Figure 1 (spheres, rainbow, N blue to C red):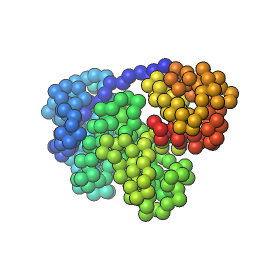
Figure 2 (cartoon, rainbow, N blue to C red; figure 1 turned 90 degrees about the horizontal axis):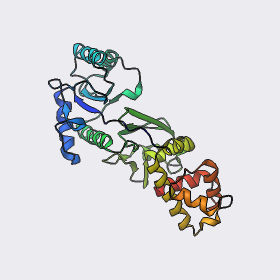
Figure 3 (cartoon, one colour; figure 1 turned 45 degrees about the vertical axis):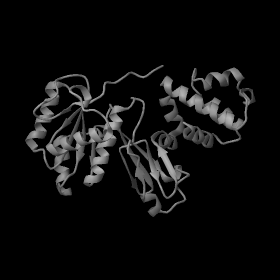
Figure 4 (cartoon, rainbow, N blue to C red; figure 1 turned 30 degrees about the horizontal axis):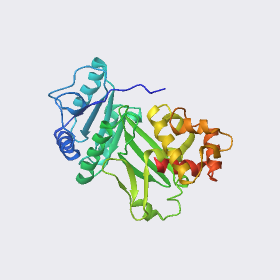
Amino acid sequence: MTTETMEKPEILAADEHAESLLRRAFVTTGLSEGKRGWRRIKNWNHLPSAGTARLFIVCTLQEPSQEKIAQIRRWKETKGRDKVFLLLRGRLPSRAVVDRLAWLDVRDDSRIHFVETDKENEASLAERLLAALDCDQQEHRILEAWWEEKTLVVVSPSRMGFSKIRVPLSRLPALKEHSESALAHFEIDEDGMFICWPSLDVHLGWEQLEMAVDGQAALRARQQSTEFNRSYGAAIRTLRMQHGLRQSDVAGLTARQVGRIERGECRATHAALKKLADAHQMTLADYMDRLATAM
């Protein structure tokens, strides 16, 4: 079973700063800005025509007036385009941010994300946004992350909008014993592939973070993809061989069943993963962590 393919969104730069930022990001990432489709940056002078693709609107909050935001809302009603907003604070005072959010009247947090950053980090964020929109539909890239007390919040842009996961520190064994100051010093890969804590030598990608929150639910969702099942099966095979096990050494599964799982011909069920973990003399959680690393 494969998931339905969704068209890549189009990008509207709502002001000169946003447009300049995105054009530089296309150059820096090595992506070629195109004349049509998602790689053509639209602006107010060249609004996209009606279509089925979502519209990613990038704007600096001090720029749009209440009238211009009203135009965006009216345009939605007449054109029928779903919209996703990436809002850059710019020089806008914090007390004025609430006004702009109220004017937009977007109540679904998957369709709006607000960032507060300096010029250098703003450029990196734009590059990660383009990398995320360019990658495969099933692949998640990390746009930004922050700590809320002892919870790591991570945001990923996609063709649908923004996905957000909250990972309790207690679910991250590689991090939970370290100090707050050590945890605060992390970096995001330039392509958004992972978050890195250089001083701790810890790298965590979106899939690992999903597994930490709810491993089985995340796995079931990803197993809708044939390509994922092949990759996951290859990781199962790699780990088995590293432990010197034969396919016939997994109690409760036949060698043929193990082979089908490793080739991605069928998904690895919870019961099968438990038997594989037992064969490796690991807990299920540790075994799944090792598989995520092997991928």
